[in-house]
Image (cartoon, rainbow, N blue to C red; front, side, top):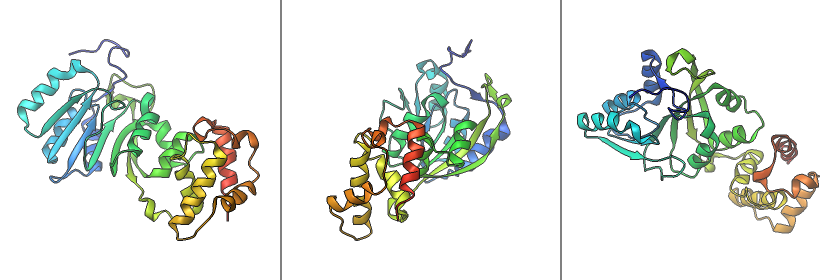
Length: 264
């Protein structure tokens, strides 16, 4: 099957560089005990490599026109399961690892979905802009969200020539490994992470609850009144305080994070 233009292939860019392909697979560290979910298998180039290494591979593909390619793989391998649909809409099956070459356009909702799953490790071929902002811990919503839940490792950047059709920018191979909440002992880091659990609450209320959560975690009792007094002492702008955390702009996030870092 041939795709004629960018809109025709639903933002898919198929990896055609064998060296990058092999490095991507090796970086994923797949073994025979793993159940792997691949998001966006496309024509199955990565999938075939995964099938040879993993116990089972479950692919989630949006474009049902690729059914013919994936049916061929199912006839060759008995450890492949195919799910058609958007990864944002379907339940991610239980697995040890997830691999994906993901369109930048859905990276934020995908990361939001990832943090609510049980997935411990995710290897991604993704736009270099997101990868670099996350690695540099840039103070924007997507970078903060990613760093709050995962450690990030980068293998290298991938040139547009490694894909067909060519994307308009560099890509990067990165790996996300989930942070265990029990291992987060830094108050500021804990509060930022916990704010995402309270994202639909006003910032001032979310911070009060997050601080109580943190003190409970380390064995201290903190009343709501005590927590409120501590948060009030940060002198956070009332415009920010009275917005839902989920609605803050990147500029407001920077101001809020600076205030949180003043907590002792």
